[in-house]
Amino acid sequence: MIVLAALLFSGVSAFYQSGDSVEILTPANFDSKVKNDDSLWIVEFYAPWCGHCQQLTPEWKKAAKALKGIVKLGAADVDQHKDLGGRFSIQGFPTIKIFGLDKSKPTDYQGARSGQAIVQEAMKLATSMAQERLAGRGGSGGGGGGGSKKGNPADVVELTSSVFDKEVLDSKDMWLVEFYAPWCGHCKKLAPEWASAASSLKGKVKLGAVDATQFPDLAGRYGVRGYPTIKYFPAGAKLDAEEYDGGRTAGDIVAWAEERLEQFAEPPEIRELLNDDVFREECREKSICLVSILPDILDTGAAGRNEYLQILLQLGDKYKKRKFGWVWSFAGEQDKLQDSLEIGGAGFPALAALNIKKNAVLHHRGGFSKDGINEFLQYVIAGRIAPMVLRQDVPKLRKAAQWDGLDGQMPEEEDYSDLDDIELDDLEEIKIEL
Image (cartoon, one colour):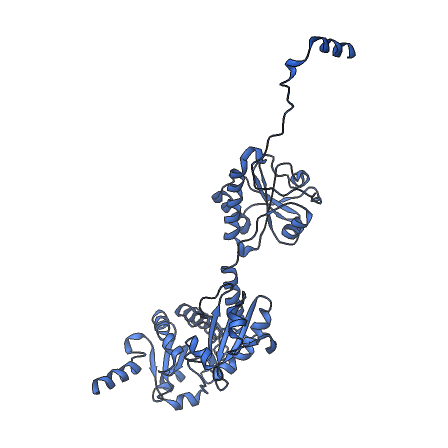
């Protein structure tokens, strides 16, 4: 029993050890180490039983090791030292406080809880603190994330056990769900940020909230061990929830959600130029569209055309974050468009990047291959190709028949196989008539 107790207590105290580069803070040393020090300090206030604190520990250690000699990271066990928790109004775990130039006015860290994110934010804070000193100004250290626009709490969907499966699991939408407790201080701080993010993401991502004290079955189903816990349910089929690992400001939440949307978004459609509506949607309403003019079907066959379209599809997927429009036709089908863009003079296939709002076009001069077009797009994005100003307005496109996906058919030739049956007298009559 003594050995077991020793192991249990060593497990608590072993949250952080002297070799972790994390300063262990207590009421006895807090002022001497933090308050009276000129360094930038970032301090975690934790409780050993807190699930989120346990998850943060290895990331906190990584960050402390990376920042050693630059920014000081500390940790205070508020479960053991409750007076420290009271002194800094700690209401939930973990709470991370930033002690900058004015140690009497610490601010909350609101960034993501990965080692990399903590290091990045610490370096920004250190730079800001140095600039403040250079300018001879004082003031408090800054927190991450910044403020947010006021959101509508009604945009957050209140979820219960009776509606959760139907609303979330059976939905094709992407969901972020917060599990909270009404008494939780961190949950109260998150509430306006959550509402703001829900309003910003309305129509794209759904944000919900579950009162885990009222619906412990839902909290238990998803392994909720601390508050708030945020779970991510991807768009489409939902096999299981994933942990949200972003920051807790509205801006962080929106950025995280939009990144997931783009990451799992379907590649853009490579649309055939069948009418002017397609051109308007893909070229006039987007900043840049890629116009491809492929060879006639008789020159490539269906297999050859599909190879070209597959190249465009792969590149569309690669550059989907750019929101390019992608359209195609074949030689001669939209001849007036070809003339206005001056495309195809060197043969087909041909490709051009069109910015119709700026009345400019850039021509791809290389081979119609994945690597060749990819290099061209890199140059376009970097602005390393001088555009050509269109010399004439882009005309309205005519309606065209959609390609049926089949090989082309040669036009039927006149059958002269029965000429042998013509009598010479008939030819004489034809000559006389002529």
